Image 1 (cartoon, rainbow, N blue to C red):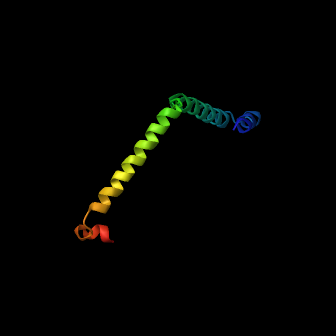
Image 2 (cartoon, one colour):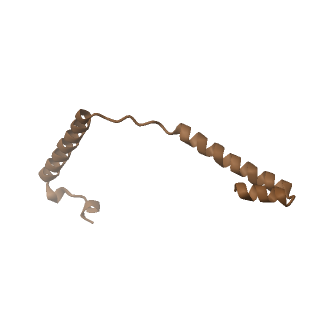
Image 3 (cartoon, rainbow, N blue to C red):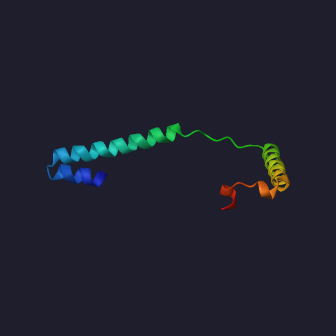
Length: 81
């Protein structure tokens, strides 16, 4: 883009050079704004990660147990397909 803008100015196509330069600056500005909006992530501790994993495992086991206890004849037609 920069090369195109310089080339347009050299061959005296000032309006095209200005338009290309404005497009270039708008892209740079858009990227800088996007980078500022991204939240910084904070790492979680091992203890928190293990607690989350154990809770997910516990809930999965509960869900499987409930699904096993449900009467198979009580399944709706949408679940059979």
